[in-house]
Image (cartoon, rainbow, N blue to C red; front, side, top):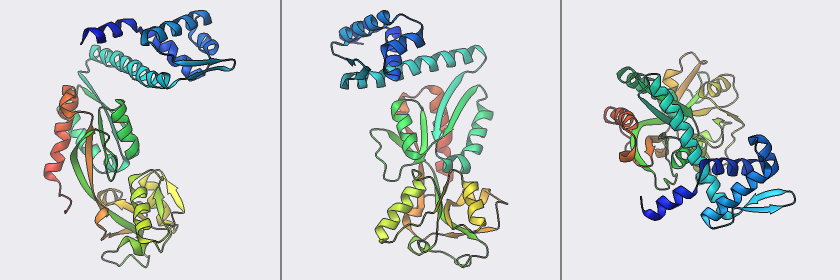
Length: 313
């Protein structure tokens, strides 16, 4: 750490950062003082000292409260990361006292969670029982954002046309989207089908921000035909139940459909479109800079790419 950086770190104290975040969240020094059980004058003094430390105004003060300056917006982002990191550090250290020897935060899409992660994480946990894994399901864009902001160590998602924004990626698994229809549907006997023909039917889809929905909207736009996505749900089993009850057809990853035995009298038809073949990726800020426990998990998950069939070029 350079002398100037060390001097800056010494000028910033955590209590002032906590109070700054509270003021930003509540929009008022007075309300923040009440929530934090401290005098409003003391909060105001802390904020003034903080502004002096960073040598710029952080807040616009007015009769209705406070609003953030551009510098304040930047500091709020970094302050939340610092405070979140401290909470994480406290939590992880307490887990070490309880016998846990590692902690990895993973954010992944529903496709990865349904198709591959139960077996992969289960096998990893058997080999490393003292490493704790926190797994959360999110849309691909939110997975990337979480990794970028540092709230997730590892992300697993379908990159598609997403901007990596400086993040590193490694291939994890492949899947292929198939069309799911009731067994008595007119399309059920088809050996394969192009998505443009599917656009003639009402479609049951996942929420609008999912990678499958984005891919369908892009394909529909390229074909010049409208996408009749009448129903949107948040889970693959809910989608299958809707399709089974005649409310439309839908796209689902092939292995996910194989795993969902008994959810209606349904069948699947392969899509001929090249975009239906997908690669799920591991994402991190810097794989080499990850903690040892996170690198162990990445190495374990990457083995799936070696053994899985690859997407055709």
